[in-house]
Length: 251
Length: 320
Image (cartoon, rainbow over all chains, first blue to last red; front, side, top):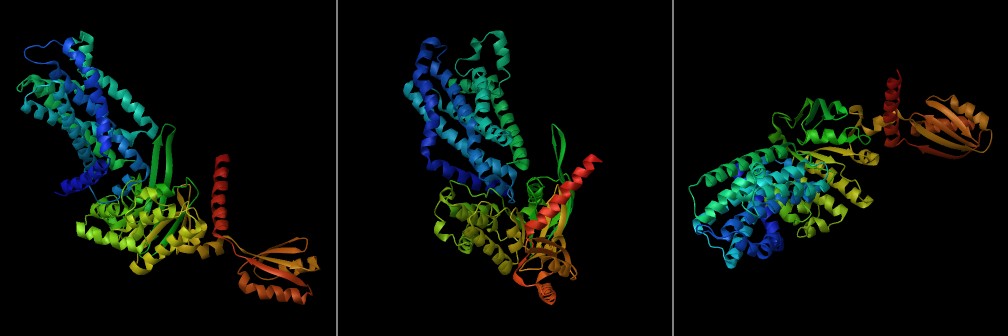
């Protein structure tokens, strides 16, 4: 199909550009690794092992979502120099599908995040993480869904803001409450009632909870189902909104 | 090749609706080079963006190379080349790769895209830049890359938005010669927006002047200049200034004569043809002529006259 070959064409071009600066992939991992190193060890005391789970199985899924929020969430930054140079307009005056313009970029971001997620998980194994392979692979599928939707929303934001200077502050302002409300640092089961209610408005809470069950080897649970549904809705919704923006983009 | 009927664009903002393009009609024939002139904010870029499918018109219609702008925007995109003011070359990309990618986006196979990239690199004499990134190029080199990108699919219609803005005189002349060659060798139809009247004068078969969202004048540069502004003849006389003024004012085709010391300034039609008559009349009146100069009106004069007239009318309406 034309749309797939167009998307793959752009995806490969964007991936080539990214792979030329492999350092950027590593830099994106510095923060989560620091959390692993400087915060993780305290969790072993703070979260006493319950029913065979260990603190790392709780913590690593949260770190993966954090990686997404602060990695793919900033994907729109890559769009700004291209908008400024007229690259987006130039491509919009070709017959290529608007969805392919978005997908080509989003697929690159998803691959970058998958590489980072695999590396981060391996580092965590070094720290003492033990989790079933099937569950980890299942979590990576959710990581991909997360990257696709966060990157799409990030491009949507970059194309919508009146000035590019607003991009970083807006992403920061949105990402931090989402991060805290998703129970990334500590499970939301510790939250008082009002905070727990509030946390259900963050879609990432369902994804973190689902990934935690997967890491624990509990596959047929409500949390996994909810996480999968939320991830699916996020992917479809964000791609639809992002494509609409590329149709009318004012860049 | 391009037919535009009643094209309008209204932007809504907090202060109410702003009409950027208030109903534009024009046609561009196959193989024509047409200039699109207008002051800042006149609606040039908005019109250009509508015709290149980047902006949805609020009303009206346009047909480009037989394809309806609104109903067949995909076909229009296949048919046109567009070089925006900002260019379009990706700063970090290797130029050859970027041009090949553009060919592929236009649906070419890999080998076809490579062949076409080589062809446009040669056409714009930028083969030696092909392995560099756009970020390392000078303004003039960059502009040629932008044009190569816009022409990789050999479009029959080319839209250029201020193609020589911020270029040095040599680079401008080079861009002009490339545009002329496109028409000579491939019969390309070129629609070019510009601020520079010398550019329109040099390059264009016909000029459209847009002001406050409407086309206010449309003709060849020569006709516009002849219709709007008169030639000026400056004559320095040695003596008998009054007699000279009287004599010249009676000659057919002379609209006005003014004197400043010994220098006379005449507004007249077709000064080149009338010059000998003017000089003979002065000779008969025994006026000694020291020097003669003919000044042709520039497109700037036309532009100022037309867009100034527009502004005055607007002010009158506001007071009425």
